Image (cartoon, rainbow, N blue to C red):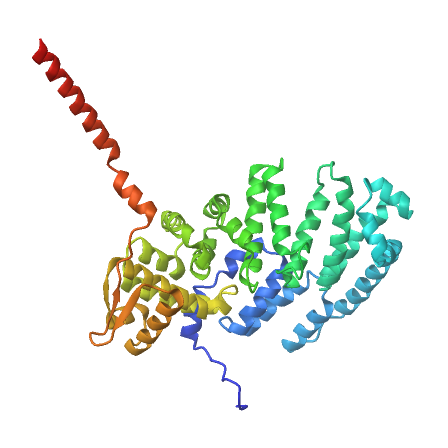
Length: 454
């Protein structure tokens, strides 16, 4: 083994089978573009939970539906087979298509390479005005979409994304006209390009990124006249694609998290893709700013438990519904397997485990004022010494009002004074009852005085 490199874990057939049951790829594939599926299958290939040949065959089948001929040839070589001659013929056809399509839009491409002319495009009030100014035919502008699609199918996602961005900018000149199916498809194409280019965070304000496109698609679907069944399907696709921007970004967009966890999205998940509750739960665990949503969202997860359940959702239910710390700790251990085999959660396990332990600790602290360190260590799946160091750091970083009693090996939580809001609620919660009783007593006293005078 080369020094400095870790030996790759070799899974036994039993271990692989255990991990397979947590793989959601078969449920997600129907809602993803084939290029995104290739992205996901490459990950599964690295995990080695399926037979390598089976994954390679599946990848080859996907590549056959794209223009990535060279990758398909390489895949045949990986399988120890000779690529069919038809692939070489197809390569020539694709190259010819690219050349013909480029020649058709060459005049427009030259305009788009001139920054001054690109800025001028935004000043036109209509498509006809744009075409007149640059002496272009409408067919040339529409041809840009075909050229972008060819580039996308060849795996040139950056160029495809740029071309589609320019096309959508030109189409925006006719903003009063309803969006066509072609324009809507271009927005999806832009989103796919952003995802495959990993363009999740804007380098500067005003630069469109994946989250912005997701919001545009969602807004269109909220106001479209499509059949409800079609809208549900499109929103299901959108929620699946949003996972790439949420879990592959270094810092997910706050508005995107709100979109994924809002009432409409949770309704769509309940109706057509309950497996996404795994990622609803993961968001609640990974994103500390979402604490205010935990109670209501976990209630929905609990309500849908009959439709979908896995260690991530069961961890939350054990902690917040059953308040069963032993069960929560057991489910957290299983979450390690879930994250290992999950395309979106794989790189987040360390943070997932840390935040999940924090949730266990916080919940335990709300119930107990004195906490035995060995006891809480068992709930956190840690050694007592490790747990004590972890709690000390937590008290320091989170500025918890607590102290470590080393002699008795326990954590002593200081009882925090009730907030002003809580005090007001506490003092006024029986106000209505007391007011009613006071009024009743006054009326009774007044009646007694009248009777005395009589």
